[in-house]
Image 1 (cartoon, rainbow, N blue to C red):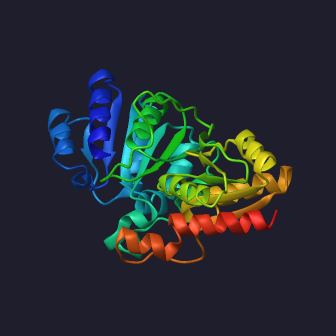
Image 2 (image 1 turned 90 degrees about the vertical axis):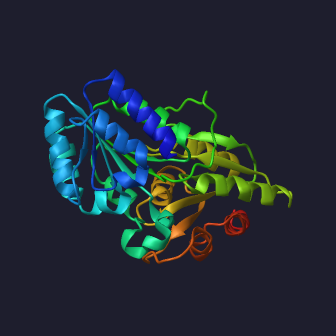
Length: 308
């Protein structure tokens, strides 16, 4: 994922003199490649220190000057620490910011609960006109960033860094506000985002072995939500299961349930954390701990079907 991003960032810096990159003392997370870019573009690849609010305010000022800032910190820090600046200096002032919140949720593993953002989508959903993307793989990340870099307003990306579980090939195209159906089914729909997309596909395989056909949707744009696709899934399958590496409060599950509650009451089961903090552990342990496994998702799908 980092190699793909750095290649894309280098292309943007080379081809567009208005692109600038700001980092909150996490350049090491991208490895030597980002340090090389900082040496090549010392005025446009900037290390801002452990000061997310200041970094966001600086980026907002750059936007006033016509620059196109891409800013990065861990998802927990760039949203929690920088929310006032995002809301006022960015969105309220109608500035343009592309915000990368990396290693969300359980991806923080041994950094522990202090670093685990299970609330960042909920916070960012309250920012008017903010676009929110929960990224499944590197192709998706770079294709979307390549579009929003030239769009006005706030775009928030939550994405892993170190690894890349490929979902899409290089020819894939992504429309903002439109989910992608990865698998068709008639019995239930799993609407997932981010790291839960591949796990949802694995759950659908388990269900298929039991004769249950599940639709799987990658709802990579949490805001704006693809309401048309949500409604289609509800009408065609009658049971929805949402799956996200985030709290069920205020995230994708909330967005889906809120829309269906107002327009097409449907059975909805939401998979995510519930009123709890993160903790220290391996990815395997944390996925099991929070119910982010194919087996747990398959169980919830069967529960949803029983409620139809």
